[in-house]
Image 1: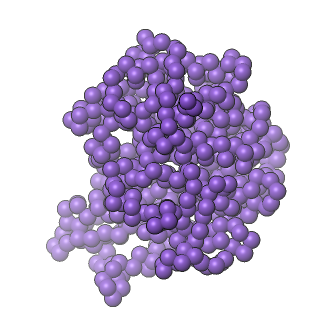
Image 2: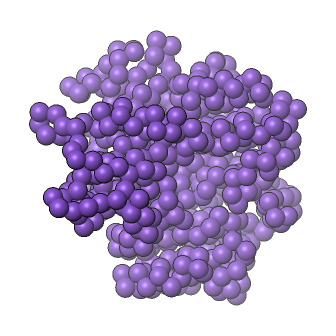
Image 3: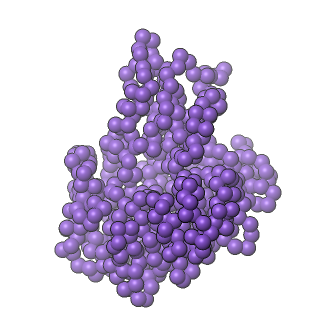
Length: 506
């Protein structure tokens, strides 16, 4: 019987010489393919020894490290469900995720053990481990006693492999359920589409708690048996220094802007590079053009989301990579643009983007009604993005429904932040809008009305949010005003607020 466990497919792609270097870190460590094989086996055996229920969730909020990647691979290998959590999340957010996903295992940084374990144990999580980025923590101490041999657990393509929380446009986050089949199909399509070949080396400079760094980058390198140059944090000077040793780089637009500020970024530095991929947020055409001029390379822009992994991509070869577009639907993916009446729109007309394919998720965790709502009768997923297909067939994303803000590649949903602001004493109402920012692409600006007789201060509201929410969600500025612009229905006109504050960071 064929094993559809994603780990089994990744493991089968390891090179025949297991003693070759698989990962080289920025602090001088190197891990062989054998180290990955043994490390994931020991961690998988540790998980198996805990007597977890079938389909148990393993929630992880730790700093980026090779061991954290091994924990992800070990969770797949052992047949459990991986739940990555952004390292910036604070207690209110973690409490919600643990309460909603009910993980059997929680792994956190030692420095957060006090408050995280309290939340986890209270919610009924039986096992809480620590894992730090210097190869210490109770997880590794326990795994050290486990066997380094392990047979990947049998899984069907439709079995759950990971849950990714995507902040809710209407407030609370939803858990997108991705299967072994979703992720394997996408990894294989991209291997082919992006021309991965023997000898490729990836610079991995992304966080590993969302799709881009955890799935697209890691699966891409592993399914090709390619070495990774692993950077714990993005450092533009170090990336430029490492470019001559690599062939592939993936980044969010903010990283490309920062690399362009480095004098060392030249055609010579990029001489061995084969591919630069950008995604997670729109790439400005100026960045696209300046990159081409400086390096001689054309950035390949693609489009995906937590619910679908990758959906579209500019071509690697055979056709033009067009700035301002996200290319064509990937092989096996069906994409259409529909009007409000549910009818397909002709080329050039703007409407809602809908997709269908083996990469599209199974639905939202414990939200059958929401899942049903987000799919059409004929099985297409409504992405919530608005776009068009141009006369040459290239897909252009023109905006996002529901006012989503993408800041530095991270999704910020105004409804969530407004909820926290509106709960503060003295606040009558608030509105959060995204405005252009030279470094992050877009940042949030909060506009707040006080209750009669209350006195509010923008700086204090921002300070209060900092103690409760991840940093990327914090508005860069907060203004207290007497009234918000409204339409005849009384709805706040966010477009007018965006217009009013758009020059703040110009």
